[in-house]
Length: 326
Image 1 (cartoon, one colour):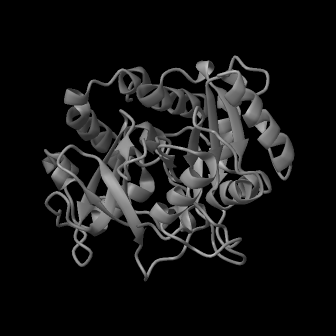
Image 2 (image 1 turned 90 degrees about the horizontal axis):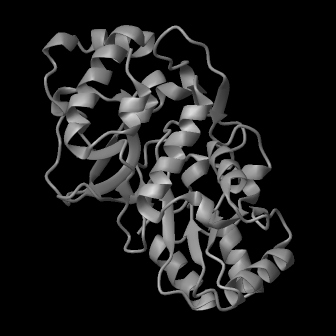
């Protein structure tokens, strides 16, 4: 069994060693992944480097229960999807571990979440069950030392008033929101939020015309007098997140690493800054599958930071990420 404490305490130099240990464990204890390796005729014992690890197609989270080990899921995260579409399901054996990973990941970029007043504008996520983002943000709100922290559904007037109060009193504030709702706020209540950290999670949810991330950020910066807009990257199938501090490039939390593969050859990797499909290693997924071949197009730089450009045309459009990325 893999020690979760060792995953949380992971120095960057141990990432590959830990990834290979988790691969050996999941190749044996994850029935779906084991069958996938068998179909590829992969001998797990001969895998000695990350570049040799096969990544599980993300679509299998729609059709199979992906669990490593004998424990049962305590909760199930689901993707939003579109009406009538099949949604992804992530069987989560240890919800407390997910929250610890999320807090640790956020703190590695911004410091402890306790120090922020957390204001969440996530209407599309609140209106359904099974959102991993809502589960994470609810924990952030619970951990915040500020009683003003909370969710806002349609009450933009109250949110604008709270933001103005926090701005005036220099209260460290995280405003985290889905793209279309942040644009609604920007249009209806433009105001000076220069001291507020505004973070978008992507997603127009069919409520607005799709625009590039650059256009979204430009609109928000103009409406709120911001020097930069932050971004969060996550998905139903991951327990770790990545963050962009406003330059368009995401960096993974300590438990996450991204590689770019050829579009036409899933087993060939690309050099830095070349557009391809993203493979994600999420060590926090020790109880499901840590090696996921996504349908997201992007680029990975030499330092491991990555951009998300869009979704491969042939793949399903998933509700958690409907924005066209620039």
